[in-house]
Length: 595
Image (cartoon, rainbow, N blue to C red; front, side):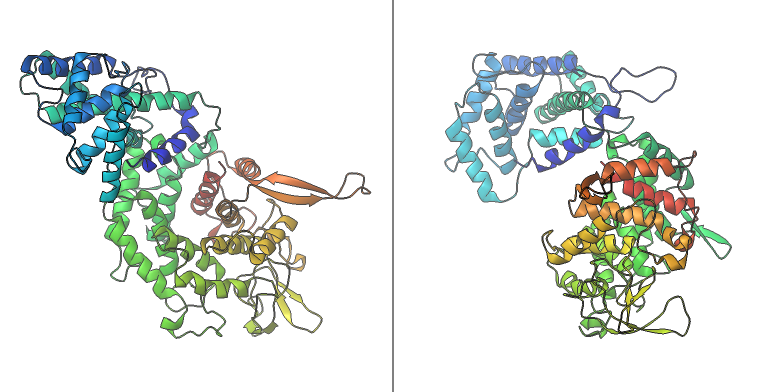
């Protein structure tokens, strides 16, 4: 049986469960609270009673003529608050187990895949001892030969946990089944065994899910959703209209695909089960608005198509609703089409080979490339695809590492019109913006050539990109980037800028820097950054101090947050960081990874 989904859902709930309410719903129109303890006790008892009475009166096993219904009923009875066990608990259970065994076929199955899977589930959980090990093993082998995993009780529990929201709990998710159980207890007339089995299964799944939430609420695990994030989420939610965010440009304000994509991505940093129904509805509306506006070529938006498409892919892949799969497939094709490779007339000897830019045949850069590689992975493209291998050529040419960077050539100076630089690689392990180019200035080498200065946001983008492309942590390229990060660790500025360019340059792209820092270190599974610090007395050997970057970044961002829940770069508004909307999205994306 497929239990993978259940294992994924529960850790996510455990991470924020201390914030889940556990009391009875308050009065006065407030949001409902989760009931603790056993839910639907009377309803489960009543329905089990109705089913056992039905079997006794009509002289058939539990579930009537349906083997699948019988197996589901027994699987539920084994997990409910009464914990029915075979043998000798109640005659109805004993007879039902015997009836199941009688259905075994010569190939080991008990019918179709669904029926066989539920029978294995029931037999494996009812006995106090492995009485039916041979039957279970044969049935499991038959299921394995079929290839497709069948659902089981764990999946029923996972379905309940998937439905939990900030204002929806197991007590609500089993309400329809509870009504049916009450009606059948009052009168068995018209009771359908398949429906009754599914109702009992849902009620018991709600009991088990609620028990899981009780345990999570008592867990010492730190919450993954803080008051600072909630305040930012509320501010961001208020900026959308029907899930759509606006952008302002050239004195005009208009609905924008890029900001809607990034806004929805940031809103979805709030754990699914923490969202209210209204909050989720806004996200649903925004995602549907984006889907309806995908261009014929697979891109989104009217300007900077690659950048916009990557942002939208991030939002839609998280959402995962109807229509997403074909939309992501089209977007993947579009992003691959933007890569500067053979299909677009590029050769490996070309400076921009393997890169991706804003789209429309623009030159490539590391910023667009790391967004693109992330989007390609989110659309399901594997790390060993040739697009990632081609991207490695460009990544190496942005890294100041002479052992792998083969770029030398003329590049325009971005800050001095008409000036052309004779560029070559540095060797500190960090990265610039694109081969030979840096927004942090240049280092003039003894031979007169210029090396682009490595700086923070692009070095983290490099580390993230290497990881997305499947480069292992022990690779010299990754190790060199990590060393640069250790040597230049700071949250005060975007490090690496030439001091001669002035203090303001250190703050350009600061909140973008925070987001990419978190994404890169999380992707590369770096738990601590080992920073070398001088000894207090100035005489002893330097100390190597491990920095818990998640804790440090969370504290730093919370310290920068404005009273209204927003963030804004007040020291350098370059790259639109004077806008609260953009910086708040960057910050929420970063904080999500500070678990």
